[in-house]
Image (cartoon, rainbow, N blue to C red; front, side):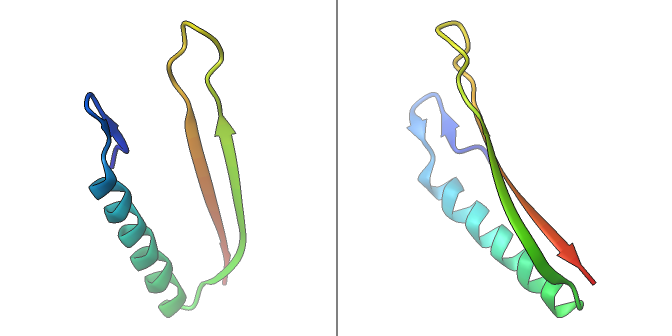
Length: 63
């Protein structure tokens, strides 16, 4: 879910995203998957004309 809208940060979506991720990680663990690595990455704003950026977290599992 988007963190931002025209009015600013959508805190309810941050909480909802955290709950969805926690639920998925728990379900995968219950299915026998082991969380092996967590990596993060950022694509930051590239200048005055680019108001965009993204933060990514990757969860790597093994069975």
